[in-house]
Each structure stands twice: as structure tokens, then as C-alpha cells.
Length: 355
Image 1 (spheres, rainbow, N blue to C red):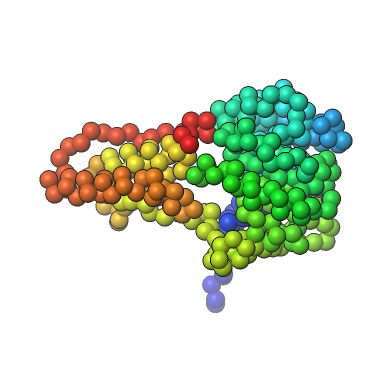
Image 2 (cartoon, rainbow, N blue to C red; image 1 turned 90 degrees about the horizontal axis):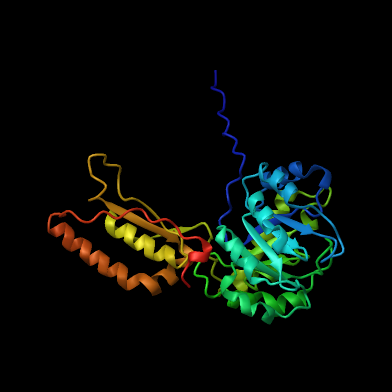
């Protein structure tokens, strides 16, 4: 009798697809009476993030939901929550949205209150801070806040309602230029495109170096396969980047990591701390096979970082790494004499990163 086929264990969170572009599913056009189900469905179908359009009926002529709803939804998914606050006074409510569990918060540059304090509050909480701008607002309006930004959101429709037509001229004028505004970010700076993103516009947006594509009405069409739409948007955006900006070479996947160095622990942790101070995340792991007899303080450790940040790390830390490698050889040749203990560094918050 044939043995029964083993079923693959079910994972509540789908595996991330290797690629450059990310898709944030907006729930603006979902069933607002059953948002918990909508978010679970988007997660199951492969969304990278959930995009939350918060409207106050004043800054834009529509009303959606507030921080209490976001807090309730936070319990329903492990995906990052990107909050887009289309409200007149975000400073009054920013603590509530941070407490609700938003991973990034984007406010509008057109608001009539001081912007910098709110951006600093978001970054001090360890979240990504962003500014969005209406189609008619020039990108130059963001310049005073450039060094405080982790996210720039280019609106390619007028904010307030879903299902509008994509403004290609706005995307062409702003998206690639927004990427240049974030050049100080060695890792993690993102350009989001929000409005009219679908399978017809994804390749165009990808060719302008958009990092996150906000997909709304296109993925909620009744009878359409949401997972396929998400995969199409992501793949077409990567193809646009490949042939529009990258000379036909496939883009570096955002999830790919590389080994930057293999060093003794005291050197590895010192290098890790230095690199993380400029905003590049680093992991260190024991190198080689698992030898429980080999003390951690004398074994080698791999220093890993995102492949997309490797060139920036080489430019800033290549010489220091090479010096450490030479020092490690001399240390081992001397019989691994005792060295000062180096504690594992604590990753900096966004506001502690040195540009």
C-alpha cells in the first residue's frame, strides 16, 4: 500500500518574492465592513504591505477611518502597515497612529502646520517617516525636509478617492527625481507611487525606479485573481526597471544578502556597529560548520548585509574591512591572544543614523 502523501505545512505568511519592487495593497476599495478579512486576504495573496488611506473629510473630500481602526487591524496581520495620513493636523494624532502599530507614516507636505516636528516624532519612535505630495505640488517642496525622509510618496491621482486614472506626466516628472532626493539614504529610502497603479502602468512606474507600488482598485475587482494581479504588478515593475534603468540586467533583489567580510567576533561586531550607524542593517553569524568545541571569541563570524547596499558599504568601509582582515591574520598567527570584549551593537533608530 502506497504511503500517504505528506502535506506541506501551511504558513500564514507567504514567502516573499525575490525582486526589487514591492506591492502595498490599499484597502480603500476593499469591503470596509469587513476589513479584517480584507487584510487577511491580501496577506494570503502575496501583498508585501498594507496601505492605509486615512482621510479626515477636511484635507481631502472623503472620510475613512482613524487610529483605533488601525490598532484593531494591527492584530490581524504581520505585514508592515504603511499609513498615509491625508489629514489637516497630523501632529494632533501622530502619537495615536504610532501607538496603533504603523510601521511607516506619511503625511502631506501641503498641510498648514509645521512639518518637521511630526517627521522627527515618527523617526524618534523608530518608524519610517514620509512626505507625500499632490500631483500639482512641485518636488522642490520636499527639499527642506530631505534629510528627515525615509519615504517620498508621489501621488499620481488627486488624493481622496480610489479608482482614478493614472497621471503619467506626473510620474515622469517626479518619481525618478524623488529617488535622487533620497540619495543620502544608503539603505531603506523608498519612493512610493500611489494612484492608478495596475498591470498597465506598473512597467512604466518601475522604469522610473519606484520602490513601492500602491495598488488599490486594480486588486479588488470582483472576479479577478488578486494574487495574480499582485505578482503581475511586481514582475512588470521589475521588468521596467531592468530595461529602463539597469541596462537589461535583472535588479538586485531586496531580500538578497551578501557576505561582506568574515572576521573574528571582536572585529565583526566593531564593523557591524560602524556600518549600522550609517543606516545599513548588518547581521553576523558563526561562519563555517557548527563546532560546539570552538569558543565564539576565537572562531570566525560572517558579516552579512543587503546586496543592494554592498557598493555603498564598500565605498565607506572597504578600507577598514581590509585592515581588519589583515589584523585578524596577525592575531591568529600570534596564537589568538585575549582581546577586549566587544558587545553586540544596538541598531540605531532612524533619527540616530549618521548620513
